[in-house]
Length: 160
Image (cartoon, rainbow, N blue to C red; front, side, top):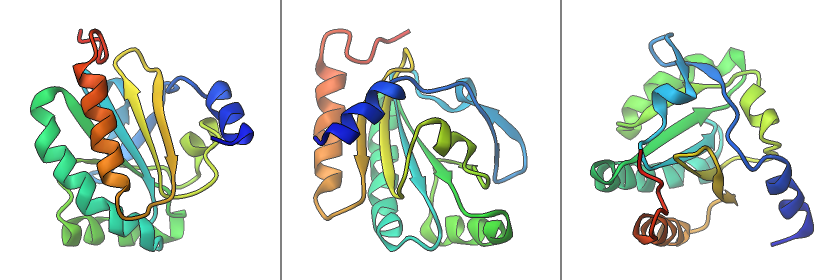
């Protein structure tokens, strides 16, 4: 882990409270979308090819881990003029997890995120336990191992 990444994690080690619109134009707060134990948050854009390669893996994680108290939340960061592309792409990709819209990069900026895709794993206390930029084949295996590790640790998910 580079020093820059460590500094970023220290400065944004907790998920901030936020309100973003979902695809139905309803406001959603962090409390509304987070999982009871863990939440995987994926920052992505429609124009980002690595993002689009990761999404099917996140859908599988959503299906396999929902019963274990893990939620997956996609945060789309397309600009306001490209937002019309998001709902059709979500349908095309078969995304079943919550997708929120951050067209002005407010949440992305609050977390000091510089690139897409960026994945976070947040525990039930709001602590960011995992931070990963980019996507290479195999990253999804690393993510599932990390989720399993946290879920299996005593108190790792801090169930409420």
